[in-house]
Image 1 (spheres, rainbow, N blue to C red):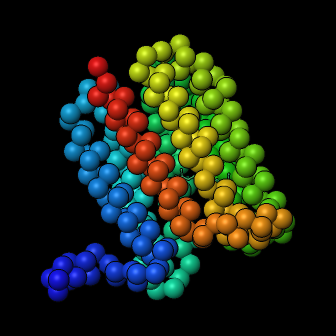
Image 2 (image 1 turned 90 degrees about the horizontal axis):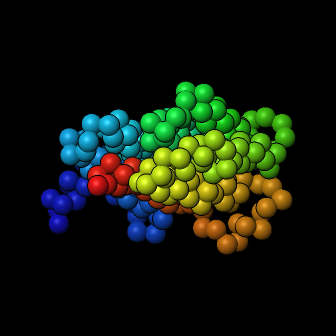
Length: 240
Ligand SMILES: *C/C=C(C)/C=C/C=C(C)/C=C/C1=C(C)CCCC1(C)C
């Protein structure tokens, strides 16, 4: 037991039993590390045309693993995690946009599609950060609304816009992977505004009574979305 705890100490402070936020940071770190190892080690097992997609899956979870270590330690020290959180997102969310581009490239997706997705996701995250940081006039609800508009634009592009048509024209495994990734964006990403409403003040404060904590919601969302996204891409890469 003593040795086990020493190893654990090497990896970071063990969270206290009742510290749900600390425990989810802890588990999140491990899950992101394990997923990264899985994706990187799979690189040579897939067809060459899917290698960049798998590499990007691994980069997403690896970048998250590093930020989770910082967030876990910041939380343990009683510090704010918001900057680490948003630096993580501003790197990983555009990479998730790259995944859409990569799987649809052969079907005709262009750099312009990618640029639209990346710009929209950057607007979504910068406005969300401003709302959470509370440094500018307007209040969290207004900045959250701006962020939500950018989010809906992303949903529109992949689900109803040109990317959806390209996916339909590709058919087969590419179309079904695109469908599943779109579901992650529509359902999985919708977890984040819930966390935002739990963690900021606004007309939606009634939600605070039902939702445990913003960080816990974000941590659950990250594991589902980052690892899930990568597994969908992996599944496509090993299909047939
Ligand atoms: C791996 C990290 C991911 C997939 C993060 C996604 C984050 C969002 C979809 C955040 C969206 C937000 C809104 C739609 C409104 C409120 C502010 C945000 C930034 C939490």
